[in-house]
Image (tube, rainbow over all chains, first blue to last red; front, side, top):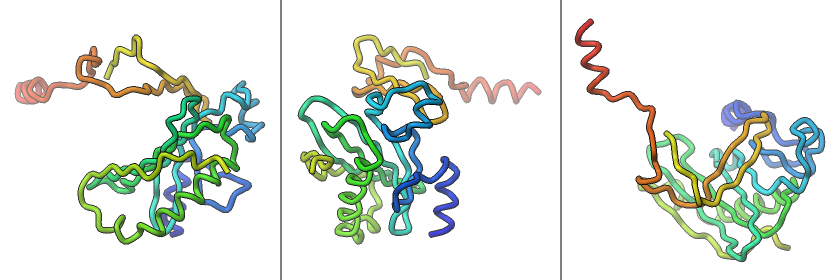
Length: 138
Length: 51
């Protein structure tokens, strides 16, 4: 696990104020210092890609805010690639905060735990639509 | 690779590092690719064969 965390840190600093092991590539609405440096407003934080280490595996997750009602969560698997697992999440919630990301990760953690055996056995490229629900809405 | 994004829905965003990104929110078709910077293998092998 610690080796994966070191690998994760290659992408940047671990996200603070959360127990999830995450490095975000795009700023979140509550990261005020970063937004000031980038000359951005919190309401511009409508998408975020990040790497996440969980259960001895690294995942790539992309969250996108959209006004239209086409919320979904999908899982992709790319074979013959190290860390070939990725998730795509579309939500109507905007902007994205650290708490939004945590809500997503709690949902994905449960899905990974429930599907752990299936995930380890995959050898072919695969795309799974997990849900059409907006998992960011409580 | 250069992609023609005319009439395509795009999201412009900034990374934490300050880099600008354009996310194309639609599938890319082969006719959308207008140029490619890849070196052709045949040209490369011809050049190295002459050395």
